[in-house]
Amino acid sequence: MTLPRGIYAIVDTSATDDPLALLDAVLRADVRVVQLRAKAGVDRDLLRAMLARTRPAGASLIVNDNFAAALEADGWHGGQEDLAGHELAILRRDLGERLLGISCGTPAQALIAAAGGADYIGTGPYAVTATKADAGEAIGVAGIAAVVRAVGIPVVAIGGIDRSNIATVATSGAHMAAVISSIASAADPEAATRELRARWGDPA
Ligand code: TZP
Ligand code: MG
Image (tube, protein in one colour):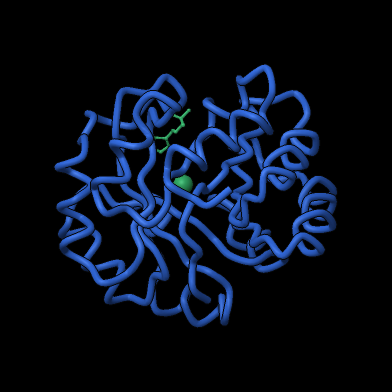
């Protein structure tokens, strides 16, 4: 499946008290790629309730970390640590048509993920973020652009992306911008998402 360009909204259960309300807001703002990030574990009832919203909206729902849960959804996103002890080719095979996204900190990691059949690469952090304690040093436009140049598959930039810097992130050549706090902590998440989309360059 091809990833559309634009905003990749991550519904992180530690960043919101009401993941379904947040999901509804981003779907109203026409986001078409959503990730469920639940570091305390994926609640299957929540996942199914999310799918009941994303499917009619024509949006893809990708599950972070939990591969078995991802098989109920539209894709899986894993980091380098999630790949340890797994054969990328087997994960790719088991996902079938579902999306496979891998977080990569360097062009070298991205090349390996792309060769293993990833549909997209997540890379960052673009800027300093309080959302992920072990996100590492900010890599900026140059770091994202280096990953974009290395691979022929879509790159999703992540980390510290907000209304003030998203237009700059777009200059990296990234295909999408992934956001957690700039939507989850907004007073009006739908309006915040629309503004991010506009600043990214998405048509209204
Ligand atoms: N991976 C790298 S940075 C990050 C993740 C999950 C956190 C992104 O959150 P925010 O709030 O958009 O900076
Ligand atoms: Mg992970």
